[in-house]
Structure formats: C-alpha cells, structure tokens
Length: 148
Image (cartoon, rainbow, N blue to C red; front, side, top):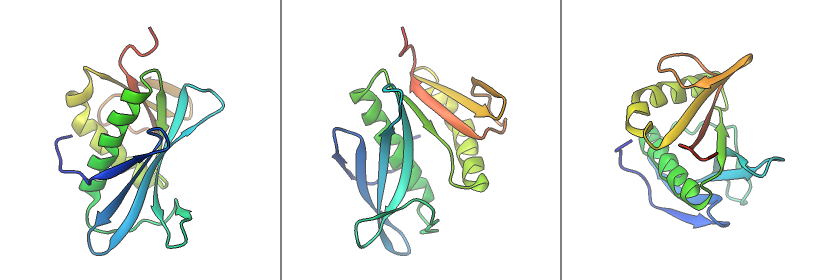
C-alpha cells in the first residue's frame, strides 16, 4: 500500500500506535495489538479515543480519510511485526461491511505484500491462504516463514 499515512506515536513496546485522523473533524485514533492467551497471537484493533481517554471500538466516524487511516494501520503493522517477528495478527471488521472493505483492500494489495507477508483468510469452517475476491469473515497476517 503506497498511500500517504498519518504520523503516529509508538507506545507500549510497539503494541499501541496513536494518531490524529484529519478529515471533516480531527479525531484521535489508536491501533492496538492485543495479546491473546497464545503469546504469539495478537488481535489488531482500531479505535477512536474519546475525550475522556476511553476507547470507542464501534463508532464509524465517516471522517472522509479512510484510505489514509488504512495506510496508517498498514504502517503500524510493519513496525509491530518488525518488533515481534514471530507474531500472528488476527483482525476482522466491526461490521460485515467493514470486513468486506478489508477484503477488497487486501485483494487489491496482496501482490505487493505476498513476498514478505503471509496473509490468510478465515470463515466459519476454514482457514486458507488468502484468495483475492473470496469472502472471508476475518484475516490472519504474519511475516512469511515466521514459524520456521
């Protein structure tokens, strides 16, 4: 993804990245990589930071800068995986339409990342190497050969 992205602050040992979405409004955002019960598996979450410091995981801001936000998330993923090269990152959208959007973007960008990232898609009954334009319920990303 060769899109412009927002500058961000790297926090919490490269597990949190804060930035400002600049569109119709200025909205503080964060990308967080949460550890799971399995120490190699992290979930990627994008949230708005509310004025009281709490995180809003559900609201879609429609701020007009979706491409820049997604490019920012990709940049955080690069830094996160550089810091945690054995990590596996799992994510899905907070709605079916958002998951479909992620599917479209990954389908479009897969050729650019397939040499260094392993991208998997999953649905209710299967996990497979990502196939462009196939519908998935979620995604798994890791550095290529991170388990060898």
